[in-house]
Length: 335
Image 1 (cartoon, rainbow, N blue to C red):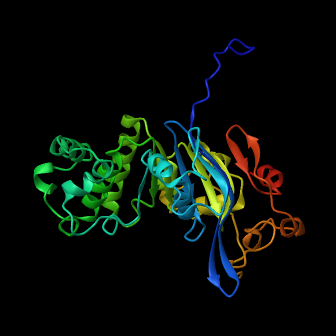
Image 2: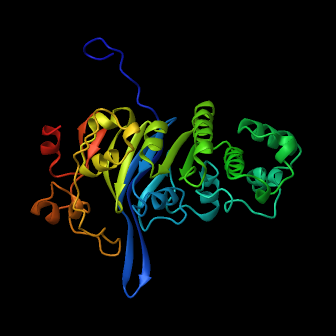
Image 3: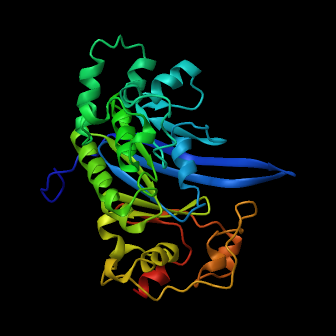
């Protein structure tokens, strides 16, 4: 118990931890794309962490680095107590069985020559399962994601809709009973009517299986609604990390506020600050040559010389709330 007599909350076990991830891609001429620059994150058991940002901010690269596809250039990733970097190929292969990734385009993620029953069974087949209960387990997995086994079991991906293909991808990901599910823009290529079905399915599935999930997307409302916490990225760096349920009230980084203000009027909270202004004349910075200091400074209404000289440290300003901004105090005082 705490000093005031309250029952202390037991911290949840960490399912996944990443520290100072750096991923860079050479493009010739001595140049390289600075895709991810020093990103760290923690994912508790049973938690959903949303990673939010515009296209090109590095969020998908973070997701792939977590599962070591490819491994980051520097930094560490730990799945529970197992540090993935430096594992021998066979050891890394075993660790990956505890993590599964759902890709953005469900159709291209599935082998067009294989039937659904074989695609869903792919994981157990790779791990040498004898297949004696293949049909029963595949049918169970398909039902769990809302598909009729009799209808889809013997079809190939091109015979299914996009939403059905994504359900097949989810069923396949769950066959090895993973601890962590990484979802890389899993609904962005689907019709709006199907998106809600897939999101509800992911939320129900993670809860029923006790999964931890990293959910990557550029849609503010989608990330906010499905996540417990949200990590906002801009040009390869983390801007802000905060609980999703207080996002409209508590967000202080100018970029996070800009994303919130970009929501359609019907989706905005009464507390959303619509007065965020950016330098519209400024070109979006290139990841080949990102700005010094704070990478958002070329578009930020609060930028000063300090923002160009120093990289803002991601620091805690409240319970579960961290922000990388030199002027966060002035931002909070104007709210």
